[in-house]
Figure 1 (cartoon, rainbow, N blue to C red):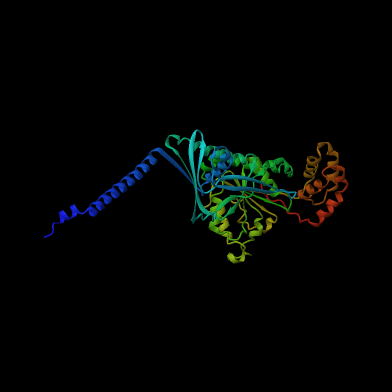
Figure 2: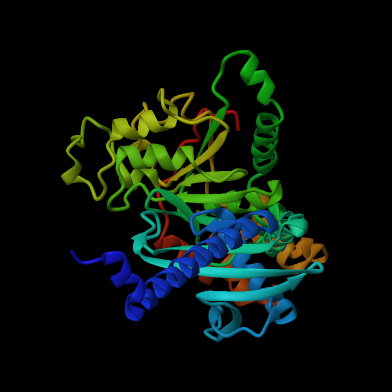
Length: 434
């Protein structure tokens, strides 16, 4: 009978194999222990903050990294370019290039702390709102320096908001969300839009009163929302006044096109509910999207968009409609609107903006040429008496003769000729408070 114990003990190859196996097992245990120890130390000593691309602060953070990158970024190895492009009214183009950390890991020194910036893109995941690949920016630093994160976020936010200080941001719908359209516009002075005597002041007073009485609406169970309809011939200052009013109040403007293809009842209600804070909702030319329901069936294929008339009414003041909003609608043809659309609760104030009155003509003349030309302003207004001229046509005439008020007066016949070709029958003023 073979003695196995003696065989194994006397076999040097077998003993060496057991030794290697033991060493390998020991190294595996040590490696696993080192890995777990490193993970434990990471959890105890490091802290991370992840910002996904769908979060509002994501763009703020990229802007902060672009602005502070030259000062705080240590040895960047992969940079991404961000280009700002603007075409001016005279046709010239200006561009501005800024660099931000690209995909990968970078190190930033800020506030006395070293911070690792890890920007990653997941090409297998798509942001359903923007149709762009899902991205994240992760900041990692020592646990004792965690207080630097709120400071970075606050600085990034303040810088982003400072870019829009004194400006009006225009938003348009993009899928189920609102997105800024172009660069922020310089706020227009309310006095630059000359309406008939008392009209601008009355609308401003009504909006201001509404904004100051939220608790009054709440105490009486009244939905806290307000609707305005500006109607009248083209070129009478409807959209310009809304933009100037938004600038005066410090509001932005959300422009919604009811004829947009792909717009549905559900998406319309959602957009009205998620409009950015301190924004005026603007529905331009509502008569172009709908005529009275007795003339236009509810079939979606008969309209450019899939929004139904009943869907619009429900979005304005239905059960699912949102509160804390101000809606402005404009139309050149109020007689084409269904009475159900402009009843109180949906439209609380109707404002007629007609052709330029003698008051507007004089005021615009003196705004362009100064109050020293009040005598010429009177003569100019008398020359236009009885004629239908829009404020847009007046402005165009004054721009042509911007340096010579006498030439503007001498060539008034040219203005009358162009105005006669585009005149629209006068509409009776609606029974609104204005």
